[in-house]
Amino acid sequence: MKRVPLLEAVSDVSGGNRKILQSDFLPEGPLAVVDQGRSQIAGYTYDTSASVKADGPVIVFGDHTRAIKFVDFPFAMGADGVKVLQVREGFDPKFVYHYLISRELPSAGYSRHFKFLKQVEVPRPRIEEQRRIAAILDHANALRAKRRRVLAHLDDLTQSIFHDMFGDPDDFTDQVPFSEIATLAGGRNLVADDDAAASEYRVLKISSVTTGRFKPSEAKALPPEYVPPAEHMVRVGDLLMSRANTTELVGAVALVDSDPTGLVLPDKIWRFVWGDPESEPAFFHALLSTPSMRRRISRLSSGTGGSMKNISKSKLGLMSVPRITPTSQREFVAASQTLSAVRRRQSRTAGVGDELFASLQARAFTGDL
Image 1 (cartoon, rainbow, N blue to C red):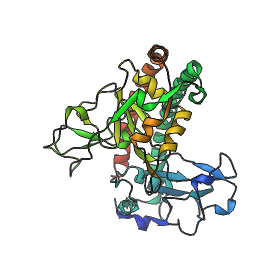
Image 2 (tube, rainbow, N blue to C red; image 1 turned 45 degrees about the vertical axis):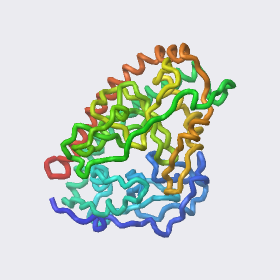
Image 3 (spheres, helix red, strand yellow; image 1 turned 120 degrees about the horizontal axis):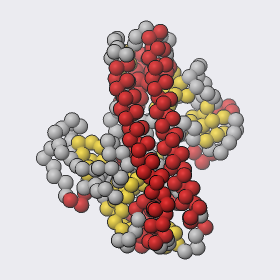
Image 4 (spheres, rainbow, N blue to C red; image 1 turned 60 degrees about the horizontal axis):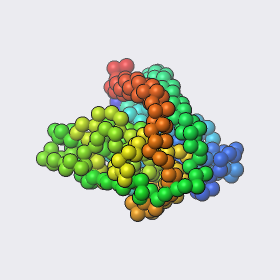
């Protein structure tokens, strides 16, 4: 299958468009705002003159986040790190989109990533074949989306149980500093030169926790000769938090509920070290995932690297957290156990679906579909 450099398949039409500052995003309005975050739509604006000037559907790339989105509706650009790509003649937009999301780009931390995307070579079969492949992948991706919606619904039910039992964390009169609940411990910033290196240990990536659910597959190889200290090893039952990410994802928490054998903490993910040994990690996972607590955590973040933010241990230690007795924590865990079991089963099914989709992608772009 013939391949061409990315910029022969798409043109960068980002320039000349008015950008909307995040502080100006509105909850509703006539024009959607698309930024480099993971959500398809970040907000809205009444400034319709900011509508991106492009013909037909486009692909939006997050220069800091590596997020890739297919956008087929009028929108305005978020102010930072957004690249708008329009396909050239002879290419189907959905085909190019599916190909780009199948590529694994290197992570350069807070740096920009478009330089890596530009190195990608895009297959160029006949346009009819592109459309056929895009339609097949669209259908398969829609099935994955349905499974993800089921998981999101189960997460919403867990939050509903929490709210029914405890209410909004902002309404609690009895609040204590986070430092009374737990301290935080991280690992090292160390990876192998080659991700295929023969090492029995792998270090977690930030993406292993940013969805709020633990993803053990999101990890990179450590140098083969490196043996991590025991305190850096990830354990079942650990509650983990990302200390660096975009404004919307920084401070995300995930509970280690699957086998983490050989997985190691990096410096950008913390493990909770409980002040009270009776603390229930599953309870605090639910608490710190509530909208109220997410807002508190986000307000503590700072940084100048584009939209990438950090949280310091000292600031987090001073953050107010509702005081909930271990007995009440256990009651919540018991009430949500059935949902947790259902979610684990659904998550395994979704994982199989993701693997099948990845296999389908590989076949599609090697001419075997």
